[in-house]
Image (cartoon, rainbow, N blue to C red):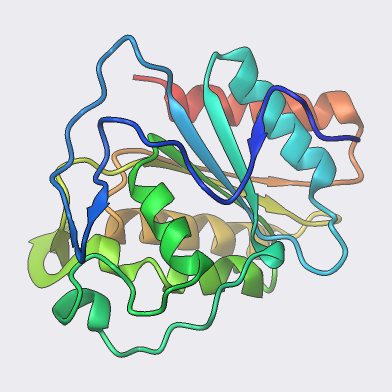
Length: 227
C-alpha cells in the first residue's frame, strides 16, 4: 500500500503555537492550542529492516486524516538517532534538550509539540522495536528530574504544562495474549511517566484483512481523540 499524499512524511515539523519551542538551550512554556486548530498527530514508525508496518501505518493515517487531523509520520530507522548516553545532560546541563545534536533531538521536540503521539511498532517480546525504544530513550528531557507522588507511586514531575495523548499500536503475527498484555501494560506505564492525559493501546495482526485492520485502528483513534 503506497504513501498517502495528504499526510506529511518528514523529519522537520512545522512551527506553530501551542507547544514549547526550543529557544537556545531552553524551552518556552507550553500554551494550549486554540480550539479552532487541527489536532496535531505525530506518528513514530518503529519498523525494522523489513517494513512490516506499512499497511497498519496507512490505516492509521486514513483514520486521522478522515477526522481532520494533521498527521506527521516519521520512519525512525531512516533517521540519525544515536543511543542515549545516560548522562542526564537534558536534565541538568541543557534542560529539556538532549546534548546530542542529531535527529533524536528533533523527534523529542516534535513529541512535546504534538496533541497525540502514536507509537507504531512490531511487538518484540511484549515490548517496542529497537528503533522506537532508542528514540523514546532520547526523550527523557521532556520530563523534570524532580520527583512527585502520582498514582500512589513516585514519578518525575512535569516539565511542561501540556502533554500529548498516547496511542500505542503493536503489530504481531498471530495471537499471543501474554505478549499483548505486556505491550498494553508497557504503553500505559509509559503514559504515566510522560503525563499523557489519555492512553489507548491495540495489538494488530498484519495478516488480517484490510477492513478488519482499518476497523480496529478506527476504533482506537476514536478512543484516543474522545473527550
